[in-house]
Length: 561
Image (cartoon, rainbow, N blue to C red; front, side, top):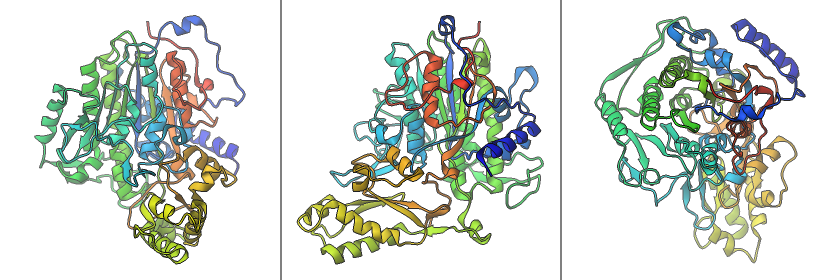
Protein backbone atom coordinates (compact mmCIF):
# COMPACT_ATOMS: atom_id res chain seq x y z
CA UNK A 1 0.00 0.00 0.00
CA UNK A 2 1.52 3.32 -1.02
CA UNK A 3 2.31 6.11 1.43
CA UNK A 4 -0.10 8.46 -0.37
CA UNK A 5 -2.94 5.94 -0.21
CA UNK A 6 -2.32 5.34 3.51
CA UNK A 7 -2.57 9.09 4.12
CA UNK A 8 -5.79 9.17 2.08
CA UNK A 9 -7.32 6.48 4.29
CA UNK A 10 -6.03 8.23 7.41
CA UNK A 11 -7.66 11.51 6.32
CA UNK A 12 -11.00 9.77 5.89
CA UNK A 13 -10.70 8.26 9.37
CA UNK A 14 -10.29 11.77 10.75
CA UNK A 15 -13.38 12.94 8.87
CA UNK A 16 -15.27 10.11 10.55
CA UNK A 17 -14.05 11.45 13.89
CA UNK A 18 -15.39 14.90 13.07
CA UNK A 19 -11.96 16.54 12.76
CA UNK A 20 -11.10 19.05 10.02
CA UNK A 21 -8.78 17.77 7.34
CA UNK A 22 -6.67 20.33 5.53
CA UNK A 23 -3.99 18.38 3.74
CA UNK A 24 -1.53 20.85 2.28
CA UNK A 25 0.25 20.38 -1.04
CA UNK A 26 3.94 19.62 -0.71
CA UNK A 27 4.88 22.54 -2.95
CA UNK A 28 2.54 25.07 -1.31
CA UNK A 29 4.57 27.92 0.18
CA UNK A 30 3.74 29.42 3.54
CA UNK A 31 1.90 32.78 3.58
CA UNK A 32 3.91 35.93 3.24
CA UNK A 33 4.60 37.71 6.53
CA UNK A 34 4.55 41.44 7.01
CA UNK A 35 6.80 43.37 9.36
CA UNK A 36 3.75 44.12 11.49
CA UNK A 37 3.34 40.38 12.12
CA UNK A 38 6.68 40.39 13.92
CA UNK A 39 5.96 43.31 16.24
CA UNK A 40 4.29 41.16 18.87
CA UNK A 41 4.89 37.61 19.96
CA UNK A 42 2.92 34.91 21.82
CA UNK A 43 3.07 35.34 25.58
CA UNK A 44 3.93 31.69 26.09
CA UNK A 45 5.10 28.54 24.41
CA UNK A 46 3.83 25.42 26.18
CA UNK A 47 5.50 22.19 25.15
CA UNK A 48 3.57 19.09 26.26
CA UNK A 49 5.34 15.76 25.83
CA UNK A 50 3.83 12.34 26.48
CA UNK A 51 6.71 9.95 27.01
CA UNK A 52 6.34 6.85 24.79
CA UNK A 53 3.20 8.00 22.96
CA UNK A 54 2.91 6.06 19.71
CA UNK A 55 1.75 7.94 16.63
CA UNK A 56 -1.53 5.98 16.54
CA UNK A 57 -2.71 6.53 20.13
CA UNK A 58 -4.60 9.70 19.24
CA UNK A 59 -6.66 7.97 16.56
CA UNK A 60 -7.09 4.56 18.23
CA UNK A 61 -8.66 5.96 21.40
CA UNK A 62 -10.27 9.13 20.02
CA UNK A 63 -13.85 7.94 20.56
CA UNK A 64 -13.28 8.28 24.32
CA UNK A 65 -11.70 11.74 24.34
CA UNK A 66 -13.41 14.82 25.74
CA UNK A 67 -15.35 17.06 23.34
CA UNK A 68 -13.38 19.83 21.68
CA UNK A 69 -14.99 22.44 23.93
CA UNK A 70 -17.11 22.51 27.05
CA UNK A 71 -19.21 24.97 29.03
CA UNK A 72 -17.97 28.43 30.06
CA UNK A 73 -15.08 28.49 27.64
CA UNK A 74 -13.57 25.19 28.82
CA UNK A 75 -11.42 23.38 26.28
CA UNK A 76 -10.98 19.67 25.88
CA UNK A 77 -7.71 17.77 25.72
CA UNK A 78 -6.39 15.81 22.75
CA UNK A 79 -9.46 16.47 20.60
CA UNK A 80 -9.20 20.24 21.12
CA UNK A 81 -5.56 20.21 19.99
CA UNK A 82 -6.25 17.88 17.05
CA UNK A 83 -9.00 20.21 15.89
CA UNK A 84 -7.42 23.59 16.61
CA UNK A 85 -3.83 22.74 15.75
CA UNK A 86 -1.63 21.95 12.79
CA UNK A 87 -1.54 18.19 13.16
CA UNK A 88 1.28 16.11 11.67
CA UNK A 89 0.14 12.55 12.54
CA UNK A 90 3.41 10.77 11.75
CA UNK A 91 6.28 13.06 12.67
CA UNK A 92 9.60 11.26 12.89
CA UNK A 93 12.82 11.02 14.84
CA UNK A 94 15.58 10.22 12.37
CA UNK A 95 17.95 8.56 14.83
CA UNK A 96 19.24 5.05 15.36
CA UNK A 97 17.96 4.53 18.91
CA UNK A 98 14.74 6.23 20.01
CA UNK A 99 14.74 6.77 23.75
CA UNK A 100 14.05 9.39 26.44
CA UNK A 101 17.39 11.22 26.57
CA UNK A 102 17.97 11.73 22.83
CA UNK A 103 14.26 12.44 22.26
CA UNK A 104 13.98 15.22 24.83
CA UNK A 105 17.34 16.67 23.78
CA UNK A 106 16.07 16.92 20.19
CA UNK A 107 12.73 18.60 20.90
CA UNK A 108 13.78 22.20 21.56
CA UNK A 109 17.27 22.05 20.04
CA UNK A 110 16.35 20.82 16.57
CA UNK A 111 19.64 18.93 16.49
CA UNK A 112 20.67 15.31 16.21
CA UNK A 113 22.82 13.39 18.71
CA UNK A 114 25.92 13.46 16.50
CA UNK A 115 26.07 17.18 17.30
CA UNK A 116 24.37 17.70 20.66
CA UNK A 117 25.99 14.65 22.24
CA UNK A 118 23.00 12.93 23.87
CA UNK A 119 23.31 9.74 21.84
CA UNK A 120 21.63 7.53 24.45
CA UNK A 121 20.51 7.55 28.08
CA UNK A 122 23.85 6.10 29.23
CA UNK A 123 27.28 5.76 27.69
CA UNK A 124 30.81 4.79 28.62
CA UNK A 125 33.47 7.48 28.62
CA UNK A 126 36.07 6.39 26.07
CA UNK A 127 38.98 7.73 28.14
CA UNK A 128 38.02 6.68 31.66
CA UNK A 129 35.89 3.62 30.92
CA UNK A 130 33.29 4.90 33.40
CA UNK A 131 29.59 4.49 32.71
CA UNK A 132 27.96 7.92 32.48
CA UNK A 133 24.33 9.01 32.77
CA UNK A 134 23.32 11.57 30.17
CA UNK A 135 22.56 14.38 32.67
CA UNK A 136 24.90 13.38 35.51
CA UNK A 137 27.08 16.17 36.93
CA UNK A 138 29.03 15.74 40.16
CA UNK A 139 29.39 19.52 40.41
CA UNK A 140 25.60 20.06 40.59
CA UNK A 141 24.38 18.17 43.69
CA UNK A 142 20.68 17.63 44.18
CA UNK A 143 18.54 20.09 46.08
CA UNK A 144 15.81 18.35 48.08
CA UNK A 145 16.85 14.86 46.94
CA UNK A 146 18.60 11.94 48.50
CA UNK A 147 22.21 12.61 49.53
CA UNK A 148 23.36 9.40 47.84
CA UNK A 149 22.02 10.48 44.42
CA UNK A 150 24.39 11.94 41.79
CA UNK A 151 24.20 15.58 40.80
CA UNK A 152 22.35 16.61 37.65
CA UNK A 153 22.67 19.35 35.02
CA UNK A 154 22.58 19.90 31.23
CA UNK A 155 26.38 20.15 30.91
CA UNK A 156 26.64 16.96 28.79
CA UNK A 157 24.20 18.50 26.31
CA UNK A 158 25.96 20.53 23.62
CA UNK A 159 24.34 23.40 21.76
CA UNK A 160 21.25 25.43 22.62
CA UNK A 161 17.47 25.24 22.90
CA UNK A 162 14.68 27.65 21.90
CA UNK A 163 14.60 28.88 25.50
CA UNK A 164 18.36 29.47 25.45
CA UNK A 165 18.08 31.45 22.22
CA UNK A 166 15.31 33.66 23.59
CA UNK A 167 17.61 34.60 26.45
CA UNK A 168 20.65 34.88 24.18
CA UNK A 169 18.72 37.44 22.14
CA UNK A 170 18.25 39.58 25.25
CA UNK A 171 14.62 38.80 25.92
CA UNK A 172 13.68 38.65 29.63
CA UNK A 173 12.00 35.30 29.02
CA UNK A 174 11.48 32.76 31.77
CA UNK A 175 12.00 29.08 31.04
CA UNK A 176 10.69 26.29 33.28
CA UNK A 177 10.69 22.52 32.65
CA UNK A 178 8.83 19.89 34.70
CA UNK A 179 8.84 16.10 34.48
CA UNK A 180 8.95 13.07 36.72
CA UNK A 181 12.17 12.12 34.87
CA UNK A 182 15.29 14.19 35.52
CA UNK A 183 16.68 13.85 31.99
CA UNK A 184 13.39 14.92 30.45
CA UNK A 185 13.15 18.13 32.48
CA UNK A 186 16.84 19.03 32.19
CA UNK A 187 17.17 18.46 28.45
CA UNK A 188 13.99 20.37 27.58
CA UNK A 189 15.06 23.29 29.76
CA UNK A 190 18.47 23.69 28.14
CA UNK A 191 21.39 25.57 29.66
CA UNK A 192 19.61 28.76 30.73
CA UNK A 193 16.40 27.43 32.27
CA UNK A 194 15.20 29.28 35.35
CA UNK A 195 14.21 25.94 36.84
CA UNK A 196 14.14 22.26 35.90
CA UNK A 197 12.10 20.18 38.31
CA UNK A 198 11.89 16.39 38.56
CA UNK A 199 10.59 13.73 40.94
CA UNK A 200 12.85 11.71 43.24
CA UNK A 201 11.14 8.47 44.39
CA UNK A 202 13.59 8.09 47.29
CA UNK A 203 12.21 11.21 48.98
CA UNK A 204 8.86 11.00 47.17
CA UNK A 205 8.96 14.62 46.16
CA UNK A 206 10.05 17.17 43.60
CA UNK A 207 13.75 18.03 43.47
CA UNK A 208 16.20 20.05 41.41
CA UNK A 209 19.96 20.69 41.59
CA UNK A 210 22.33 23.50 42.50
CA UNK A 211 22.76 24.19 38.80
CA UNK A 212 19.36 25.91 39.08
CA UNK A 213 19.06 26.68 42.80
CA UNK A 214 22.48 28.05 43.73
CA UNK A 215 21.45 28.65 47.36
CA UNK A 216 20.70 24.95 47.80
CA UNK A 217 17.06 25.25 48.87
CA UNK A 218 13.84 24.33 47.10
CA UNK A 219 11.46 27.21 46.37
CA UNK A 220 8.67 27.50 48.91
CA UNK A 221 5.96 26.53 46.44
CA UNK A 222 7.86 23.29 45.62
CA UNK A 223 8.16 22.45 49.31
CA UNK A 224 4.43 23.01 49.63
CA UNK A 225 3.76 20.59 46.74
CA UNK A 226 6.00 18.00 48.38
CA UNK A 227 4.22 18.25 51.71
CA UNK A 228 0.88 17.70 49.97
CA UNK A 229 2.19 14.62 48.13
CA UNK A 230 3.84 13.11 51.18
CA UNK A 231 0.69 13.62 53.26
CA UNK A 232 -1.05 11.20 50.88
CA UNK A 233 1.44 8.36 51.26
CA UNK A 234 -0.37 5.14 52.10
CA UNK A 235 -3.62 6.34 50.50
CA UNK A 236 -5.36 3.95 48.12
CA UNK A 237 -5.64 5.42 44.62
CA UNK A 238 -8.21 3.92 42.24
CA UNK A 239 -8.13 4.79 38.57
CA UNK A 240 -10.09 3.99 35.41
CA UNK A 241 -12.22 6.55 33.61
CA UNK A 242 -15.23 4.33 33.00
CA UNK A 243 -17.32 4.31 29.86
CA UNK A 244 -17.41 2.08 26.81
CA UNK A 245 -13.95 0.82 25.80
CA UNK A 246 -12.84 1.05 22.18
CA UNK A 247 -12.47 -2.70 21.78
CA UNK A 248 -8.99 -2.14 20.32
CA UNK A 249 -7.13 -3.19 23.47
CA UNK A 250 -6.42 -6.69 24.72
CA UNK A 251 -7.67 -8.06 28.01
CA UNK A 252 -10.72 -7.05 30.00
CA UNK A 253 -13.22 -4.93 28.05
CA UNK A 254 -15.75 -4.15 30.79
CA UNK A 255 -16.95 -0.52 31.09
CA UNK A 256 -16.24 -0.56 34.83
CA UNK A 257 -12.50 -1.33 34.47
CA UNK A 258 -10.66 -0.16 37.61
CA UNK A 259 -7.28 -0.63 39.27
CA UNK A 260 -6.04 0.40 42.71
CA UNK A 261 -2.51 1.26 43.84
CA UNK A 262 -1.00 2.75 46.96
CA UNK A 263 0.37 6.29 46.87
CA UNK A 264 3.96 6.19 48.01
CA UNK A 265 4.74 3.06 46.01
CA UNK A 266 6.88 3.19 42.89
CA UNK A 267 4.06 1.78 40.78
CA UNK A 268 1.83 4.79 41.57
CA UNK A 269 4.04 6.97 39.36
CA UNK A 270 2.89 4.87 36.40
CA UNK A 271 -0.78 5.76 36.90
CA UNK A 272 -2.78 8.97 36.45
CA UNK A 273 -1.56 9.93 39.93
CA UNK A 274 1.85 10.66 38.38
CA UNK A 275 0.12 12.75 35.71
CA UNK A 276 -1.89 14.64 38.35
CA UNK A 277 1.14 15.70 40.38
CA UNK A 278 2.96 16.75 37.20
CA UNK A 279 0.04 18.98 36.17
CA UNK A 280 -0.09 20.42 39.71
CA UNK A 281 3.63 21.25 39.61
CA UNK A 282 3.41 22.79 36.14
CA UNK A 283 0.52 25.08 37.10
CA UNK A 284 2.22 26.09 40.36
CA UNK A 285 5.42 26.86 38.44
CA UNK A 286 3.45 29.01 36.04
CA UNK A 287 1.97 30.92 38.96
CA UNK A 288 5.29 31.28 40.80
CA UNK A 289 7.21 32.56 37.77
CA UNK A 290 4.23 34.57 36.45
CA UNK A 291 4.68 32.87 33.10
CA UNK A 292 2.86 34.64 30.30
CA UNK A 293 2.57 37.93 32.19
CA UNK A 294 5.82 39.57 31.14
CA UNK A 295 6.90 41.51 28.09
CA UNK A 296 8.68 38.56 26.47
CA UNK A 297 7.64 35.06 25.48
CA UNK A 298 8.02 32.54 28.31
CA UNK A 299 8.50 28.79 27.88
CA UNK A 300 6.85 26.06 29.96
CA UNK A 301 7.91 22.52 29.03
CA UNK A 302 6.04 19.61 30.62
CA UNK A 303 6.80 15.94 30.02
CA UNK A 304 4.49 13.22 31.33
CA UNK A 305 6.67 10.26 32.25
CA UNK A 306 3.84 8.13 33.69
CA UNK A 307 2.81 7.08 30.19
CA UNK A 308 6.26 5.54 29.66
CA UNK A 309 6.42 3.86 33.07
CA UNK A 310 3.16 2.05 32.44
CA UNK A 311 3.93 1.34 28.78
CA UNK A 312 7.13 -0.52 29.63
CA UNK A 313 5.20 -2.73 32.03
CA UNK A 314 2.13 -3.51 29.93
CA UNK A 315 2.73 -2.68 26.25
CA UNK A 316 0.72 -0.47 23.88
CA UNK A 317 -2.13 -2.95 23.28
CA UNK A 318 -3.09 -3.36 26.94
CA UNK A 319 -6.32 -2.02 28.40
CA UNK A 320 -4.11 -0.23 30.94
CA UNK A 321 -2.64 1.96 28.20
CA UNK A 322 -6.05 2.77 26.76
CA UNK A 323 -7.28 3.85 30.20
CA UNK A 324 -4.08 5.82 30.81
CA UNK A 325 -4.42 7.69 27.52
CA UNK A 326 -8.06 8.52 28.26
CA UNK A 327 -7.08 9.71 31.76
CA UNK A 328 -4.30 11.83 30.26
CA UNK A 329 -6.85 13.46 27.96
CA UNK A 330 -8.68 14.74 31.07
CA UNK A 331 -5.44 15.91 32.73
CA UNK A 332 -4.31 17.66 29.56
CA UNK A 333 -7.63 19.52 29.56
CA UNK A 334 -7.00 20.55 33.18
CA UNK A 335 -3.54 21.86 32.28
CA UNK A 336 -4.82 23.80 29.28
CA UNK A 337 -7.73 25.29 31.21
CA UNK A 338 -5.44 26.25 34.07
CA UNK A 339 -3.24 28.14 31.61
CA UNK A 340 -6.29 29.66 29.91
CA UNK A 341 -7.67 31.05 33.16
CA UNK A 342 -4.36 32.58 34.24
CA UNK A 343 -3.76 34.77 31.16
CA UNK A 344 -5.61 37.93 30.10
CA UNK A 345 -6.42 36.58 26.64
CA UNK A 346 -6.52 32.93 27.59
CA UNK A 347 -5.01 30.52 25.09
CA UNK A 348 -5.15 33.12 22.28
CA UNK A 349 -1.69 34.25 23.38
CA UNK A 350 -0.22 30.76 23.74
CA UNK A 351 1.45 28.41 21.28
CA UNK A 352 0.79 24.87 22.50
CA UNK A 353 2.85 21.98 21.16
CA UNK A 354 1.99 18.33 21.78
CA UNK A 355 4.34 15.52 20.86
CA UNK A 356 6.32 12.57 22.27
CA UNK A 357 9.96 11.62 22.73
CA UNK A 358 9.57 8.22 21.03
CA UNK A 359 7.00 5.55 20.30
CA UNK A 360 6.78 1.91 21.37
CA UNK A 361 6.59 -1.57 19.79
CA UNK A 362 4.00 -4.28 20.23
CA UNK A 363 4.61 -7.07 22.70
CA UNK A 364 6.99 -9.70 21.24
CA UNK A 365 5.29 -12.65 22.95
CA UNK A 366 1.93 -11.75 21.41
CA UNK A 367 3.54 -11.25 18.02
CA UNK A 368 5.23 -14.65 18.22
CA UNK A 369 1.92 -16.25 19.12
CA UNK A 370 0.39 -14.76 15.98
CA UNK A 371 3.13 -16.23 13.80
CA UNK A 372 5.23 -13.10 13.35
CA UNK A 373 9.01 -12.99 13.68
CA UNK A 374 9.78 -11.58 17.13
CA UNK A 375 11.85 -12.48 20.14
CA UNK A 376 14.52 -11.67 22.68
CA UNK A 377 18.25 -11.06 22.52
CA UNK A 378 20.53 -11.47 25.54
CA UNK A 379 23.18 -8.74 25.78
CA UNK A 380 24.81 -10.62 28.67
CA UNK A 381 25.18 -13.77 26.58
CA UNK A 382 26.53 -11.75 23.63
CA UNK A 383 29.09 -10.03 25.88
CA UNK A 384 30.28 -13.42 27.16
CA UNK A 385 30.65 -14.78 23.63
CA UNK A 386 32.54 -11.66 22.51
CA UNK A 387 34.93 -12.05 25.46
CA UNK A 388 35.59 -15.69 24.52
CA UNK A 389 36.12 -14.92 20.83
CA UNK A 390 38.52 -12.04 21.44
CA UNK A 391 40.49 -14.07 23.99
CA UNK A 392 40.85 -16.97 21.54
CA UNK A 393 42.06 -14.59 18.85
CA UNK A 394 44.23 -12.17 20.84
CA UNK A 395 44.76 -13.84 24.26
CA UNK A 396 43.33 -12.69 27.58
CA UNK A 397 44.06 -9.00 28.18
CA UNK A 398 46.03 -7.79 31.19
CA UNK A 399 42.92 -6.06 32.55
CA UNK A 400 41.12 -9.40 32.50
CA UNK A 401 38.29 -8.22 30.23
CA UNK A 402 37.72 -6.97 26.71
CA UNK A 403 34.44 -5.14 27.36
CA UNK A 404 33.90 -2.49 30.02
CA UNK A 405 30.11 -2.34 29.78
CA UNK A 406 27.01 -2.79 27.65
CA UNK A 407 23.76 -0.84 27.62
CA UNK A 408 20.87 -0.52 25.20
CA UNK A 409 22.44 -2.91 22.66
CA UNK A 410 25.72 -0.97 22.71
CA UNK A 411 29.04 -2.50 23.77
CA UNK A 412 32.22 -0.66 24.81
CA UNK A 413 35.74 -2.08 24.55
CA UNK A 414 38.21 -1.60 27.39
CA UNK A 415 40.74 1.01 26.09
CA UNK A 416 43.64 -0.58 27.98
CA UNK A 417 42.86 -4.01 26.52
CA UNK A 418 42.79 -2.61 22.99
CA UNK A 419 46.08 -0.78 23.59
CA UNK A 420 47.64 -3.99 24.93
CA UNK A 421 47.35 -5.81 21.59
CA UNK A 422 48.14 -2.89 19.33
CA UNK A 423 51.13 -4.74 17.86
CA UNK A 424 48.91 -7.69 16.90
CA UNK A 425 45.82 -5.86 15.67
CA UNK A 426 44.38 -2.39 15.40
CA UNK A 427 41.05 -1.34 16.90
CA UNK A 428 39.17 -1.86 13.64
CA UNK A 429 40.26 -5.51 13.48
CA UNK A 430 39.27 -6.14 17.10
CA UNK A 431 35.89 -4.54 16.50
CA UNK A 432 35.39 -6.61 13.34
CA UNK A 433 36.01 -9.87 15.21
CA UNK A 434 33.53 -8.87 17.93
CA UNK A 435 30.98 -7.72 15.33
CA UNK A 436 31.09 -11.10 13.57
CA UNK A 437 30.16 -12.80 16.85
CA UNK A 438 27.21 -10.48 17.43
CA UNK A 439 26.02 -10.70 13.83
CA UNK A 440 25.62 -14.47 14.15
CA UNK A 441 22.98 -14.14 16.87
CA UNK A 442 19.32 -14.69 15.98
CA UNK A 443 17.38 -11.44 15.74
CA UNK A 444 20.36 -9.27 14.82
CA UNK A 445 19.92 -7.24 11.63
CA UNK A 446 23.26 -5.41 11.53
CA UNK A 447 26.22 -4.53 13.73
CA UNK A 448 27.84 -1.12 13.40
CA UNK A 449 31.38 -0.58 14.64
CA UNK A 450 32.93 2.64 15.88
CA UNK A 451 35.77 2.39 13.35
CA UNK A 452 33.33 2.10 10.45
CA UNK A 453 31.35 5.07 11.69
CA UNK A 454 34.44 7.25 12.13
CA UNK A 455 35.46 6.36 8.56
CA UNK A 456 31.89 7.04 7.37
CA UNK A 457 31.60 3.48 6.07
CA UNK A 458 27.93 3.13 6.90
CA UNK A 459 25.23 0.86 5.43
CA UNK A 460 23.22 2.16 2.52
CA UNK A 461 19.70 3.29 3.37
CA UNK A 462 17.82 4.29 6.48
CA UNK A 463 20.02 2.54 9.06
CA UNK A 464 23.14 4.25 7.72
CA UNK A 465 21.43 7.65 7.69
CA UNK A 466 20.16 7.17 11.25
CA UNK A 467 23.60 6.02 12.43
CA UNK A 468 25.28 9.07 10.91
CA UNK A 469 22.90 11.34 12.83
CA UNK A 470 23.38 9.46 16.09
CA UNK A 471 27.01 8.40 16.51
CA UNK A 472 29.01 10.64 18.86
CA UNK A 473 32.72 9.78 19.21
CA UNK A 474 33.81 9.09 22.76
CA UNK A 475 30.27 8.30 23.91
CA UNK A 476 28.61 5.93 21.43
CA UNK A 477 29.45 2.25 21.69
CA UNK A 478 32.34 0.60 19.86
CA UNK A 479 29.77 -1.97 18.74
CA UNK A 480 26.10 -1.12 18.19
CA UNK A 481 23.62 -3.94 17.63
CA UNK A 482 20.72 -3.14 15.32
CA UNK A 483 18.01 -5.71 16.05
CA UNK A 484 15.50 -6.96 13.55
CA UNK A 485 12.00 -5.52 14.04
CA UNK A 486 10.32 -6.69 17.25
CA UNK A 487 13.42 -8.23 18.82
CA UNK A 488 14.15 -6.86 22.30
CA UNK A 489 16.47 -7.29 25.24
CA UNK A 490 15.93 -10.50 27.19
CA UNK A 491 14.41 -10.12 30.64
CA UNK A 492 12.84 -6.71 29.99
CA UNK A 493 9.26 -5.70 29.26
CA UNK A 494 8.46 -3.49 26.30
CA UNK A 495 11.46 -1.47 25.19
CA UNK A 496 12.25 1.11 22.54
CA UNK A 497 15.76 1.47 21.19
CA UNK A 498 15.44 1.34 17.43
CA UNK A 499 14.81 3.55 14.42
CA UNK A 500 11.89 1.43 13.21
CA UNK A 501 8.56 3.13 12.54
CA UNK A 502 6.96 2.01 15.79
CA UNK A 503 9.74 3.70 17.81
CA UNK A 504 10.49 6.75 15.66
CA UNK A 505 6.96 7.93 14.70
CA UNK A 506 5.07 10.22 17.07
CA UNK A 507 2.28 12.80 16.78
CA UNK A 508 3.19 16.47 16.43
CA UNK A 509 0.60 19.20 16.93
CA UNK A 510 1.19 22.96 17.02
CA UNK A 511 -1.76 25.17 17.99
CA UNK A 512 -2.08 28.88 18.67
CA UNK A 513 -1.42 32.28 17.11
CA UNK A 514 0.26 32.09 13.72
CA UNK A 515 -0.68 28.46 13.08
CA UNK A 516 -3.18 27.06 10.60
CA UNK A 517 -5.37 24.18 11.83
CA UNK A 518 -5.56 21.05 9.74
CA UNK A 519 -4.10 17.61 9.21
CA UNK A 520 -0.91 17.74 7.18
CA UNK A 521 0.42 15.01 4.93
CA UNK A 522 3.87 16.52 4.54
CA UNK A 523 6.73 14.69 6.15
CA UNK A 524 7.59 16.41 9.43
CA UNK A 525 10.66 15.64 11.48
CA UNK A 526 10.97 16.44 15.17
CA UNK A 527 14.05 18.54 14.35
CA UNK A 528 11.61 20.85 12.51
CA UNK A 529 9.91 21.87 15.75
CA UNK A 530 12.66 24.12 17.14
CA UNK A 531 13.21 26.21 13.97
CA UNK A 532 9.44 26.56 13.56
CA UNK A 533 9.08 27.88 17.10
CA UNK A 534 12.10 30.15 16.61
CA UNK A 535 10.45 31.58 13.50
CA UNK A 536 7.20 32.23 15.36
CA UNK A 537 9.13 33.92 18.17
CA UNK A 538 11.40 35.99 15.93
CA UNK A 539 14.69 34.61 17.21
CA UNK A 540 17.55 32.72 15.61
CA UNK A 541 17.04 28.97 15.60
CA UNK A 542 19.10 26.94 18.09
CA UNK A 543 22.77 26.77 17.17
CA UNK A 544 22.86 23.23 15.77
CA UNK A 545 19.31 23.09 14.45
CA UNK A 546 18.99 21.11 11.21
CA UNK A 547 15.25 21.22 10.65
CA UNK A 548 13.06 23.36 8.43
CA UNK A 549 10.33 25.84 9.32
CA UNK A 550 6.98 24.08 8.88
CA UNK A 551 5.84 26.92 6.64
CA UNK A 552 2.76 25.11 5.35
CA UNK A 553 1.27 25.31 8.85
CA UNK A 554 1.98 29.02 9.44
CA UNK A 555 -0.50 31.83 8.81
CA UNK A 556 0.39 35.03 10.65
CA UNK A 557 2.42 35.78 13.72
CA UNK A 558 1.29 37.95 16.59
CA UNK A 559 -0.43 38.35 19.90
CA UNK A 560 -4.07 38.81 20.84
CA UNK A 561 -5.10 42.45 21.20
